[in-house]
Image (cartoon, rainbow, N blue to C red; front, side, top):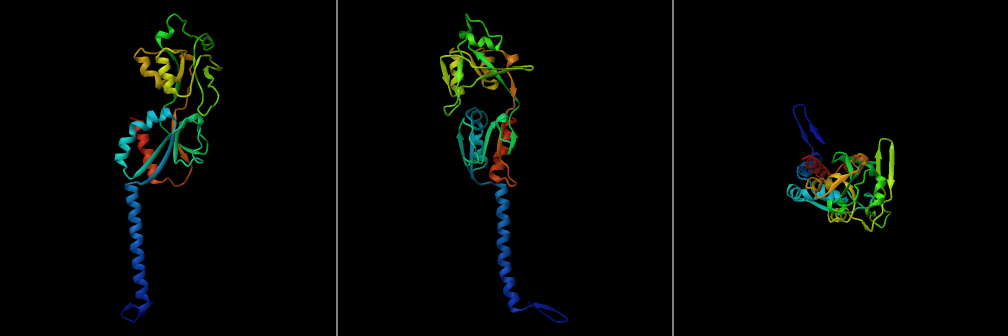
Length: 250
């Protein structure tokens, strides 16, 4: 490859050909590295995210415009789904779920503090009725039942106080499978609703709903953004995780 004399070294014809080809290869390699840095600075690609309605309203809806402006090269698809979807089987990149429902083999990023359930009803409904002071008192009330999406069972209202744990199969003439509809029904005086506290707190503060059974209302892990365990997290997914986490802390 090289011609050597006592005073100089020069490439042979074959060496010159090799060096020319290597120069092209190194130029392509340099371009590929530059592309990687560009992708790191400006992530691109497609993302599919699976979220329940309450998380979509709280964490995703408020950030969509800002996220698109910050990352115009990311094509984001958000599927609102209240069933316990397997994100791997459904070909989703990530999802949001309550901590108690996370699969153990997922990587999870916490988005909220612990949450608490809240039993509430409109003042108009409670007028002339005894306010429940024990979970068993709910049997004397019209309660708004919640049916798990997908035709699942009715949710049994869970209460705890100290070491005592109760599950109440409440009675009522109204059943819904959407918490937003449950809230509207409670505001309209349809009966007692049992919901996550942050969903009803503003209405409690405004006097539109009254809360009771708080000492019996359990706390539980909040919302987490999660994705399959992998050594490599694509730049687009990393950008989404960091963006949602930062905004959730505001």
